[in-house]
Image (cartoon, rainbow, N blue to C red; front, side):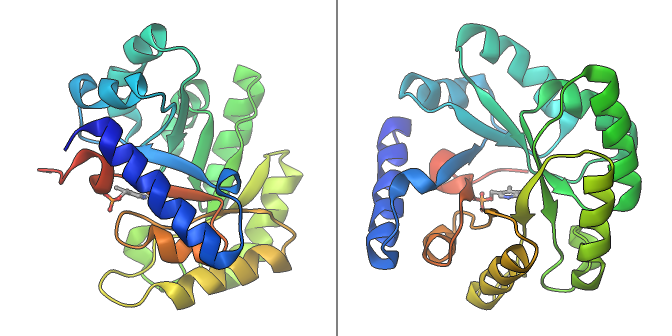
Length: 220
Ligand SMILES: *Cc1c(COP(=O)(O)O)cnc(C)c1O
């Protein structure tokens, strides 16, 4: 599908979900997840005016984005995949937002990277709402301690992020993430992917992460 058309369809679907939930579309940031896709797939979205993109691998983003950024001013790049502590410095240099802060050792590594680079990148704390440790995310019971550590390390935490279990109704998990964010005084909610972003918008998402619905299915 034509990228500009796919983009306007996603915006329409977000707007429709907003009407039902009595929200405003400008409360929601559409993060276009461009992982595995090359410049030839990304540039049509840039040409259509989109500027907020997400990647799940630091190395892949380092290879793709410096050239795209030079050609298209105003790009905002988000990291949505798990981050190894030894890549924290690279991530701090490249990304404008990190959605996958999920453990104390990463708090330490990011704090050091932010001090060194002079950039304090806004972060979401990823929560393992479905009790699937292999997906990353901190356990719900560990969230208060992790938030306290992040605040102590001067990491700007703007909200919570989740990837709910596949193949079951995601709404209860989105509602849980919303409750956890409220309980902890956080305004940001990164939730909703191609298959469920309208549900996420209706339940309060501020950032939806949409890949295949914009770019088509991935081969990898
Ligand atoms: C790949 C990915 C997405 C986008 O998934 P789609 O189903 O293609 O929209 C969103 N969030 C994370 C963390 C991802 O890894």
